[in-house]
Image 1 (cartoon, helix red, strand yellow):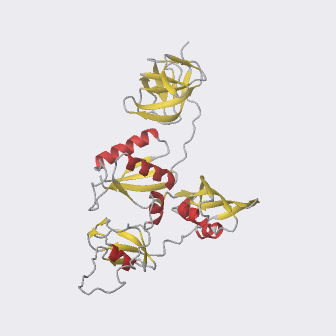
Image 2 (cartoon, rainbow, N blue to C red; image 1 turned 180 degrees about the horizontal axis):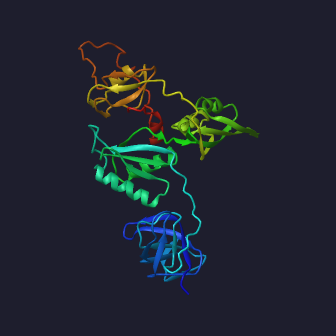
Length: 372
């Protein structure tokens, strides 16, 4: 016979030609291709649609099938509005199975059109329409990411579970040829019984003994819950606020000389843990457009950690390094050497440049300040 309750949707995927597809398990009865079925949403009225395509799997391949029986894992196309946890049933027997909850996002980042003077040099897709379209497509197949428009049509707010997930999305989009700028990540706070709460994470660090991981994490408001020794390795369990972990992974790797393992999962919400130490040092800001020169960088590097090497195009206002003291420092990074006709022995040989500090997306997201 036909189905009583067919399908319990538990994950989504997106196909260029078929649109949104829901993957789920047939709970009872049989599901046929071409059947008219009803989806039971979380709220609102049930919606009927026709199963245009029905897929099963054979090994790693997705194959089209005519019908599926109870217990089968299938993918169906035919409705774009379907969501995780929706039940698909026969029109005559509407019954919603208990829903599964998707954890809400904990971190948001603003994506905007790249409006720097160096815009358009790297990406193929640079307009707000293209960026918005790509983000909406991501949200169709990725349940833990939410896209919200802002006051400006050129800015999109992207919320996800932790800055790592958003970092992966940024890197994927960059490799696909999208060009855009992103803001510093912010956490999403919540009121629980009138108390302002923030997301916290369970952090497990496995490190060689004698590393400065404990004191670094306690500065970031983490609290140690468990510590054990296994051979020459310390295993430490912490509960840490998500915002305290922004950009921490690169510190962790250098503190443990690349030997440490850091594992983190979102735990839930806890009362706000107070202010965190922010970046103590200011930025080095380029004052004029042009390419950097080795001579100018050599003069600056005594007072700063540089992020750029020589012959890098810069624009006015671009951050080219981190100062060694608080407060931003404006520098002219394209300054050429004054040429004289007097040759001094040994004057030119000692211009040795320290290799610049290369930022990854994760470290840059952790490093930038609110207004950068």
